[in-house]
Image 1 (cartoon, rainbow, N blue to C red):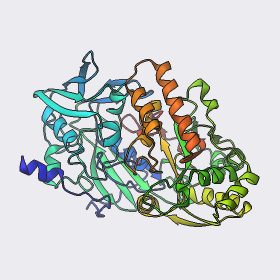
Image 2 (image 1 turned 180 degrees about the horizontal axis):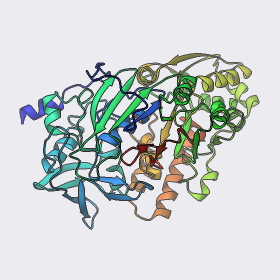
Image 3 (image 1 turned 180 degrees about the vertical axis):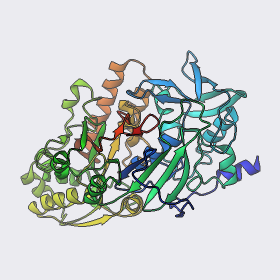
Length: 517
């Protein structure tokens, strides 16, 4: 037991140690290799530590959980568990596990592996970087082994979204317990799951290479290799696509779409389950001016959000009246009232509060929920503030550095977004009910809000749940720790030689059925 505890309490850094496989660089024109290009490196290859899209997009092809989402919806289907049952009180989930499943390192998958993975994320031993554990596993009291292929998860209260949470790409996937022990609880260099692809190499700032796992328990992947390339500059990604050096690009600057269409590339333009928003610093340990609700309201009133969205995104994103995307928002979500544009009143309040300067921090590259990148938004907001008599500094960082700055720095205004993990309303609102600053970006703590979220989680009736979530967001809108900006379209450009790639409604890319002609 002492050895197990030592493994669990090891402090894990999100900083990768760059390493390169001895394999030669793969020719992009090789038929059995698909090249995917994005703007940012993954922050981690350990599902217990991930919270960003670029990590999740790789993790979903390497790891699996007890349950999964159907390829075309958020319907729950069996995965490493072949069946399950729920007790009448909703507190005990019993999972029957698949037999003859192997991890990529040859370790057998069983009930002990499930318990090991969930136990290392319990509050008593979890590291500060395990942000999704507070969403996925926060109500778990115990993971109990019944026999080698039967496991029970005991909750302290009923949780309607729990099964959907177990299908997420973060916290819920099961990693090899042998690998966790061997590599001192650090999978950043040695990610080992049960999925259709296994890890080959990672070169920081360049690429992650996966290859087909031929001993996979399910239908084998059709393509041998997947290469995830990091190409920070949008124009460079487009150039790589045009030169056939990559097969798919994401984080597309909307200004380049006409060019891509003229070049006859396939443009995928789907409604997205995401929200792009401003976050104000509400951390009571900070010296931020936005600790004052009136200041937050005034800043919000200084920004003409609908006009900003219309002029910047040119129809490839819609104005966000709510944190909830229209695909999942209740019908009466339009009744939510965040502060509206009123520069005259904003100037008056900010002058009264003696706010004449603010600190803005942001990220550089495009994100799924913000195809223009955080820099353009930050300078636009800076101009709005100047128009009401407030000077604002803007500091721009790489994504990895930025995520650290959001926790460590005394900023006033920052930019962030959320992409649905499970298609449930709870997934967008519960993040602001946690005490984890990685998930709860403004670090806004409100007991009444938390109470509504806690009640909603335990209710099966969707109409009643929606009503409670609506009441919760109305509190948040009034307190204004965030200001929703937009819901981005899901934009992807691919070559016509790429076929059968699955873009899931929650935004991740599944390559198990993909082929390249």
